[in-house]
Image (cartoon, rainbow, N blue to C red; front, side, top):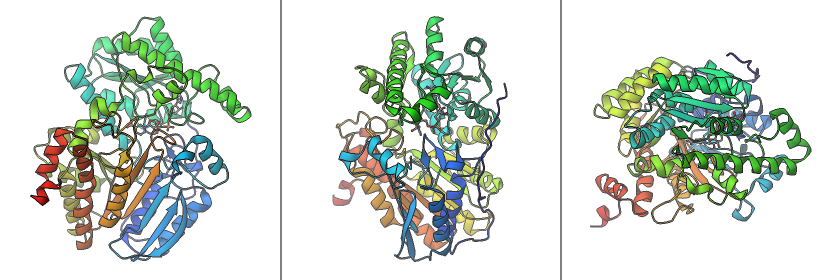
Length: 557
Ligand code: NAD
C-alpha cells in the first residue's frame, strides 16, 4: 500500500566536497552537521527544525539557525561558540585545542524540571528541547539507531529464541525517526514485525526508505499477513495505520500472543508525542489546542491501557520490554501500580555491552560521497578481523541501510576500539584516501554519558540510577580533552525531569593535532562509562577497566 507523503520545504542545503565554507574543518563540520540534521532526507519535520523524538530540535527557531550558521562562518580556530538551548549567545576566545562549539540544551533547575515549566519557557521563545543527537548536531537519520535496535533484538533472540527471530512475531508501535528502525531491525534478525503507526506520512517515509516492507489500513488484514509470514518463517515487516491500543486489543480478541512486545511511540512527551486511543488523530490534535487538560486525561488513560495490555501479553508468555520512551512512568502516574513489572531494554539486553565500553560510535563523510563511507567500512573490517558481530553488521548495513543526507555509518565499538578506529580514519584522511575529513560522534545513549533512571541507568547494581555527576563529568572531560563540539542536555529520550546526558563530536581532518585529540577523547569518553559501571560494582566493567588501565589502582599500585 503506498500512502501519500507530506512535502517539506527548507531553505538550505548541506555543503559537500572539500571546499571550506568556514575557517577550519571543525567549524565546517559543525556547519554541515547542523544543516544535515535538518535536511528533509534526514529530519522528521524540517520546516519546524524538528529532527526526531517528538519535538527534538537542532536550533531554537529559524532566526537562531541563521545566526548559528553566520557565527560558524566567521568563528576563528582559537575561538569557541556558545549555544544556549538552540540559540547562539557568544563567541569567546579559547585556544586551538579547545572545542569550537559548546552547547547546553533544555537545562532546568531540578525543582522546575517538568514539561509544564518547559512548555511555558518554550512558548516564550526562551528554550528548546534538544532530545539527544538533534540539538547536538550528530543525528544521521534512522541508521543512527538501527544497529542498536538490531543488537537489542539480536540479544532478545539469543536469550529467548535460540539465536534467531525466524518464526516469531514482534509487535510494537511508532514509525518515527527512531522507532522506524524497529521493522528493519526485526527482519534483519529473521523475524516478523507488526507495527502500529497513526500518521500516514511516517508510514510512507519508512516504506520509501525501505525500513518497512508493506503497510495496510485494515488491522485484521495486517494481522493475517503477519501470521502468514510467521508460519512460513519469512522475515517480513508490516505496518498498520492505527492506534497501537486498537491493534493490541484486536490481537487479544483473536487470542494471538506476540513473541516479543515493545513500543516506540514518543510517550516521553505526553503533550505532543502520544496519540490517545479514544478519539481519532484529527480530533486529538484539535482537542490538544482547545482543552489541554482534557487531552492530557485521555493520554493518561491511554498510556495506562497500553501498559495494561503489554502486561496482559507478558502474563500470556510474551517477552515484554520497554524501549526507552518512558511509557511505564506515564502509566504509573495514571495509577497502573505494576507498570514497571516488565524491564527496560538496557537492563534486559544492553548493560553488558556498556560494561565493555561498547556504544553507538558513528561517523559521517563530510565530502558527501558514499565511496568515503565504503572505504571506511573496509578499514573497519580490516582493523577488527576477529569481531564477528561487526563484520555481520557492516555487511548487513551495506546491503539494507539506505543513506539519509550525508553518508554515514554506525558501529557499536568498545573500549580501545574507538580510539583505534578514530586514529585509523584520521590516517586515511591524511593519506588523501578520502575526499574530505570525517566527523566522528555518538548518541548520548552510551555507556558513560547519561543518567536516566527509567532507561540507560535503570536498576544499577548499587542503586545509583539517578546520580547525574557522570554525564556532567563526561561533558567536562571531553571539553578538556578537545572534542570539536560538546553538549550537555536534559530530558532526552524519556522527557523533562528524567535524564541528564552529554554528547561529543570530533573531527578527523588528517592533521597531527586531530590525532592527539582523537586519541584522548576516544579513549576517555567510553573509558568513563567503564569506570562508571565498575564503580557501581559490575565485574565485567572492573575487568575491562583493569585491562585498559582505566582504574585508579592500576596507577596507584
Ligand atoms: P517520533 O516522535 O519521531 O515518532 C513517534 C511516532 O509514534 C510518531 O510517528 C507518532 O505518530 C507515533 N505514535 C504516537 N502515538 C501513537 C499511538 N498511540 N499509536 C501508534 N502510533 C503512535 O519519535 P522517535 O524518534 O521515533 O522516538 C520514539 C521514542 O523512542 C521516543 O520516546 C524516544 O525518546 C525513544 N527513543 C528510544 C531509543 C532507543 O534506543 N530505545 C533511542 C532514541 C529514542
